[in-house]
Amino acid sequence: MSIEEELSDSNIKKDHDNNEEENINKDSLYYKLKNSDFKQQKIPCYRPQISNMTIVSIMFILALIFSGLGLIIIFFSSMIEEYSIPYSNNMNILINNDNNYMLYYEFENYYQNHRQYVKGVSENQLKGINLSKNQLINECKGALTNKEIGVNISINNTPLKENEVAIPCGIYAKSFLKISNLTIDFINEKKEKAKLIENNISWDTDREIKFKNSDEKKQWVDITNEHFIVWMKPSGYSNFRKLYGKFENLKRGNYDIEVKCFNKNCEDIHLKNIILSTTNLFGGKNYTLGIFYIFLGIITFVFSILIMIGDKTYKDTVIIYNNTF
Image (cartoon, rainbow, N blue to C red):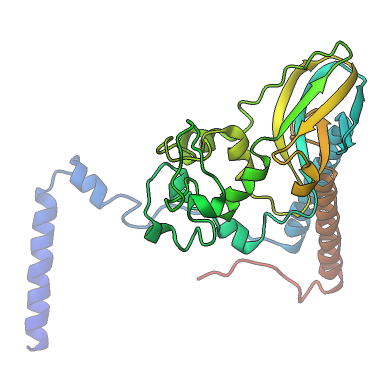
């Protein structure tokens, strides 16, 4: 095609577009969308130019926030009233104030974070789904059947068959067997047991979604039992505590503590302490978290100072800016 022909076709196309443009209703939605700033990329934008001193200012503010938060956490932790009673056959505690208390049992040298231990459970089985041996053989290896778990009676007193799949199965669930009969009682000077609340001690999402019973005639434990739910939340440390219950307005005074376990000897399950503690907005006593935030604030402040010094020393070479394209 010659140049003259191309120019002729181009002029014809322009005339056609112009005619089409004249025939379009400029008040129509189609015309407004077609010629909008968004479609034509005419929307104004803001591209900040970040300097070294801007970075210093942001980091300095973050340092103040981290340090302040750490001090607040430490302050509230210092206000918590906590009693730690080492486990023994004769346990006694003197409570100084009327208050609401959380009751914990504490372990030492118990590795819930061990890889095989954490893997030794079926999440689907805990949700109430019935699974076969073949479906559970990898997750529940070594603790697959009722015989391997060491149970023979269901929660409604029905005999369990030795070779049937244990509900729940796995070494993680099996470990709960030793503390399934754990009881902790506070007895005052009048030989009366303090009222302990043992419900709502687990997460709402766990109770409502994750832990469901399937067949109570075949279960050796109530999967919806909150002590079981609390136990099945693994700890990342070898020394940890589990929530057992809550006292509402426990009266001050002298209390004897009676602790009973499955085998009458709680030392066999690495039980170390009984903890009685108040709480605050941040939960229980946690100096470690406060110290961490203060340390993070110090580090952020130090780096802000280093950037500021570098900016003053190498002002012509140390520049932080946004690339433009």
